[in-house]
Amino acid sequence: MIKINLLPPEIVEERKRKAVHRKILSVVVAVVVALALGFGVLFAATLQVRNDIQALETERAAVEAEVATYQPYVQLQNQVNNKNELLQSAMGTQVKWRETLGSLGLHIPDNVWLNNVSLSMGDEEGTLLVRGETFDHPSTAGWITALSEMPGIADVRTSFSAEEGEEFVRFEMRAVVDAVELFDPLAERGE
Image 1 (cartoon, rainbow, N blue to C red):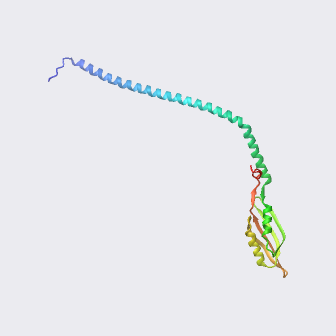
Image 2: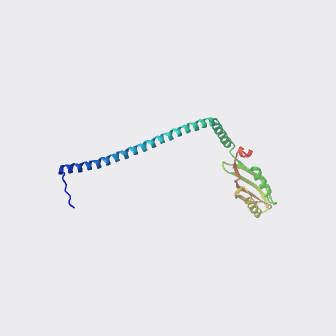
Image 3: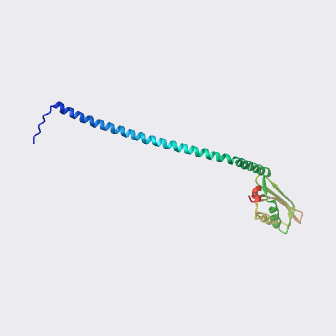
């Protein structure tokens, strides 16, 4: 079948040009619609974020108002904490003297006599100084062993152990009293 076109070529060209214009116009309209939709979605998201921010600001104001009602209690707790710290620094550290001396009395061997017992307290640990007499050096060694096994006593060492006459051996021992605890009046009352 043969096609015969009776239209002049100018009209055919005009129709082709209009078809191309329609396609370009369709693409431009589609792009404009897509941009408008994107703008609309972003605008709606912006409004939603603004609403969320406003709700959070309202909630924050309510929480701040509630916190303000508790402010006197916070100040009171801070005062209690400050006074407790002051009390602890004033009381310093406290050694369990009664327990230490009681344990010392229970562990003295029968053949050892004490002439002087001195307990002193440093910043973090106490010092025990014991002077006494016994019959022989092995008794002094036994006393050192007994002291080393006592709870709360550490680093036992002999300053000297010397014979005095023919009957007695004089000795001096030092030890660290590590039964130290910080003074906490609230813990003593069970709070």
